[in-house]
Length: 357
Image: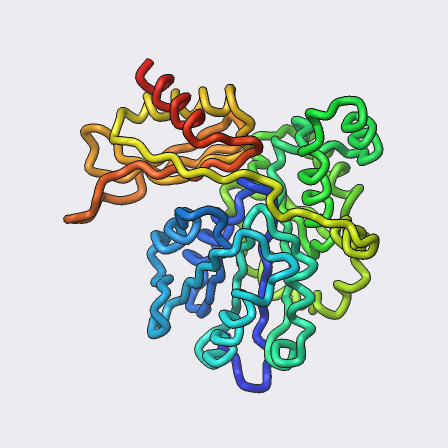
């Protein structure tokens, strides 16, 4: 498939809450592109570009260098593609539009904080609409997390709990964000479906259906492994219908309320190399003692010449060695921790104390 100057360049937006499997899905698509020329825009959250680095390691030539024939990777530093979407996103998209004859499809991975509606609306701008279209908005959902009740199905019940317990103030924005991402979706992918039985998966489906437009398809995935044509080439032209989508974010603006994009705290933990088990023990203690939603990053492990990738959501952590440390590369541990009410020094102390046992 090759783009021509008369075709609009299809763009797929992949959104979803923290740790829902967006990067895993993109890596699968990139490694199974079969000659399709893809450009990837990564909306990083935090000063360590973990997701971008993981995509670069997929081995298909995703680089920032525009001369790369296999694919291109663009990282946006802004953690929230919301009201100021044009500040970084539009210039990058305009750059890709200039190279449209060498690109077949654009993939945008938003951060866990991103609101999809303002991003899709940017495709209504004349200079973009003439050359690009939103093929689909894909919402990734962590199946086991939803089943465990991390996102309440009844917003009214959440409001009542918030009124009774001031400690739940931060939960409402998370719930609204989850609902806003689902409300703009053209396709919902339930990740980690292999961890659910049939009854559990059906419960998750019902919770999703409560917040998605009619006709939105829900499919399940294991490790992001889905056929290419199931995810791309949906031809929804989402920019044509996005204005009909109602969101909590719209209510804030309509009623003149201030809303903060700083729904989460992000800190970076750095430490010297240690044993793998010690690091994971330390991270588990961090999750127990602090309000942490996600941790991700790279680690140096004592006695190992390989770099360790660490990713965790809630109290579930995955780790694997992705590549050897390069000659002259500083072997260091850098972990991005996302949560609420985080004090870096206190979290760092918890990590090191538990790791030392």
